[in-house]
Image 1 (cartoon, helix red, strand yellow):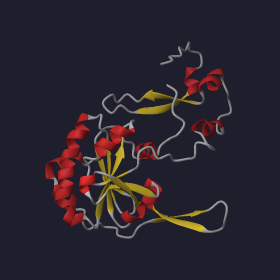
Image 2 (cartoon, rainbow, N blue to C red):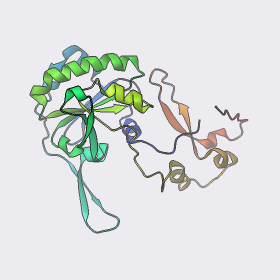
Image 3 (cartoon, rainbow, N blue to C red):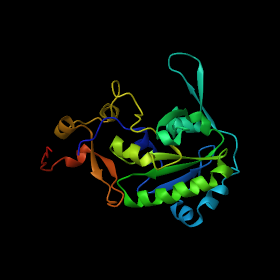
Image 4 (cartoon, rainbow, N blue to C red):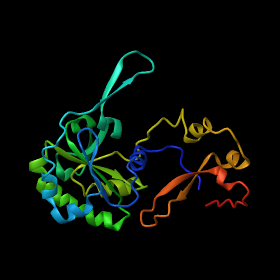
Length: 240
């Protein structure tokens, strides 16, 4: 299958944390290290008490990453969560009756323990667990407000499904389909071409990468393969 050129930040995060099944909740320290991986069962059984134990994070200082700008000699300092999520996240407005969302600076996560919640509306276990997670989060919020937050990373392909699902969540969210690079100047194909020395007929026709299912049917995930695996094969093009 041919793939969309623009990789989203959500895709990048999923790949970095090797997420293959849904739902999934990882707990990150204020410096970005994984404290607890895939704690769905613990939240289901312990509820709010599970979050209270993270109230006092072990590592309070926020790790910083210094990048040199390409056009000037000035250095830009960013926190580890800005590096992960970008400059802005979504949050629900203070007026709950309006059911609207607003942008907030990711820097507000500084010094907090953060839960990465991977979920999708199309996934029934995700919908069922979201109800439990929201209840636990609300019950623990008064204890953990200053030290803990959850960020929703969506697996939905349609923005409408993403928006409707997020209405059920009281925490923050990565905005839908935030691109990790400017597609007008860079493409995934261009990045691969720079490291490929052999161009075949299938490379010219289809590009240098294709998508395939990764074998985990329940997760409905895909991964990239090199087009060179088609060499020597008879290939059918399915237009749909």
